[in-house]
Length: 334
Image (cartoon, rainbow, N blue to C red; front, side, top):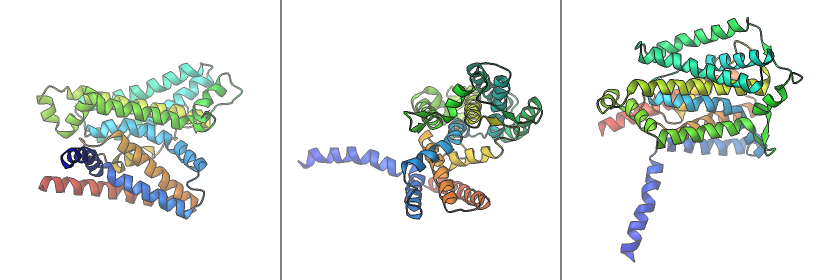
C-alpha cells in the first residue's frame, strides 16, 4: 500500500511544487489578496458586472502587453507601443472617414502596427542600436506621423456613416450579450501568445536568446530573426489595440495613447517577466494586467485621486523590479 501511494503522492506534489515556486506565484497571491481587499472595501466590487467592466477596461492594455512580453523576454524593450496605438487608430479612422470599408481600413491599421514594429526591429538587429534608444526615438516619430496625417485634428466617426455601426461592434459589442468583445479579443490573443511561447520553436528560441544571446547563436539560433519577429508582434498587437480603441470610442486624436507604454511594460514586469530577458510567461503577463486593472478599480471605487493612482502604480513597479533583482541575486549565490 505504501509503495503504491508514494509514487502517486510524488507525482501530485511535483506540479504543485513547481506552481508554488513559479515566478508568477507571488503576484498571483497578491492578486488574490487584492481581490479580497476590494471585496471588503466595496460590496459591489466582486459582482460580475464590475469584474466584466474591469476586463473590458484592461483589454487594450492586455493585448499590447502580450506582444511586449516577447520583446522583453528577448532582453529588449519597446517604448513606442503607445504611439503605434495612436498611429494605427488614426490610420484606420482616416480611411473609414474617406469611405473605405471598415474591414479593409482595419486591416491597414493592423498592417501599420506591424510595419512600425518591423521598423523598430530592423533598427535594433541591423543597425545594432539599443532598443531603448530606438523605441524612445520612434515613440516621438510615430506620434509625430500620427499628428501629421491628421493635421493635429481629432477624428470622430458617426454611426450614420456606412459600416461604422458594424465596426463599432468590435469594441462595443457583447458576446452572448454578456462578455465584452474587447475582452474576447484579449483572451484569444493571450491563448495564441501562450501557445506560441510554450509550444513552438520560436518560443524556445525566445527564451534562449533572452537567457544567453551568445550561447543561443552558437547553437544555431537565428538571433536577429527571433528579435525581429518579437518587435513585429509587439507592433501588431499595439495596432490591434488601436483599432479596437477606435471601435470602442469612435474617436481618436494624435495624443491618444500617451503613457500607455508605461502601463503595458508595468503589467509585463509585475507579471514576473525578468526585465533583462530570459524569464517570464504569457500567463504571468495576464496576471499582471489583472492586478493593475483591479488595483485601479479599487482606487476609483474609493475615490482616490488619479495623481495618487499614478504614484501607487509606480511604487508597485519599483517593488516588482526590486523583487526580480533580489531573486536573481539569490539564485546567483546558490
